[in-house]
Amino acid sequence: MIAARFKPGEKVRVRKAYPLGHIRTPYYIRGHGGVIERLCGSFGNPEELAQMRSGEPKQPLYRVRFLQNEVWPEYRGNPEDALEVEIFQHWLE
Amino acid sequence: MGGLPAGKVEPTEHDYAQWERRVDALMVLLTGVKGGKRLMTVDELRKNVEALPPDAYDRMSYYERWVTSITQTMIQRGVITTEELGRKMTEIEKRDRGPV
Amino acid sequence: MKDNGDYQPYSYFQLMEVSLRELLVEKGVVTEAQVEAAVEDIRSRTPERGAKVVARAWVDGSFKQKLLENGSRACEELGLDMPALRLVVMENTSSVHNMVVCTLCSCYPRMLLGLPPEWYKSRNYRSRAVREPRAVLSEFGLQLSMETKIRVHDSTADMRYLVLPMRPAGTGGWSEERLASIVTRDCMIGVAVPKPN
Image (tube, rainbow over all chains, first blue to last red; front, top):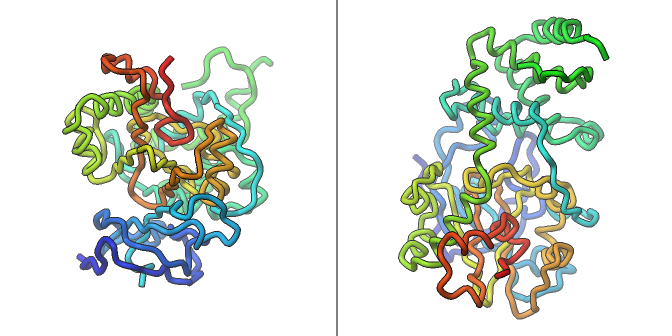
């Protein structure tokens, strides 16, 4: 089992990479910085499961909170409006 | 797809056809739920939907994409062969050509 | 399992569905009975299941706490099967409004709400809900003040989300059943709020 590296409240950044294959990290969030909202648990790696492999070892999955006005340049709303996305540990740094 | 420009959200509802529910049911069973044999994952379903050419994706309905993806996955997994599928589809087409 | 009395020729994809199913039955992968049972199971799941959970949370403060801490376990207490670890319930308050989308496909808490509506799976909702939630909500007829903070949840992985709407004023003393009756599917996705009628 892979150890969870991050704790709630910690600042993280989503890696900016564009590999081929099935990825569950949306394009729009890659490269952006956010805060860990919670650790959801560890789950099979979807990138591997999609290729008929076992998805082991399970990867820690986090919910990460981003500020809307940091993600979208023209966002207008409450400055604390947020976007919360589930991201696997290997996509976070 | 998130964040791309798009149009107004039409609050459409859709009364599911029986064949669409059967596609959904097959997906439940093939992923090992409700007593089915686990022969694929939802990740493979998604991967094969993502692999559809963009114009095909837009032309197809939700469950048309699903049935294509599940079938493709079964072929990739070796559960069925392309030849078997072709023969079966021809057979059924002939069988059901009844009065119009 | 032919559609009786239906003489329409199959579309290409309907043909594929019948063929796939027959091949899988021939190979002993599934039985027709299993498919029928799974279809009936899907039909039986309606948003009323989710509404029950919301109504219980409204009347029972300790259940609500459990629900917010561990959605799956709390639902199991009500006799509703939820895959372990996977349900996250977010509470709407006077200062925060929650909304759910799956930009990558159409992940949805089917166990509690049944099959998702067509619009939830549409390109337009999936593209715009993350980027301009207020505009999308106003298209649904929901206007929120600028003081209210909006949180959009993108179900990108294994978790599924349910919005716990605020209990509206004017519902004091209502039974759980009556409360559940005003909790619509759209309230639990976060594009509407319950209205006492």
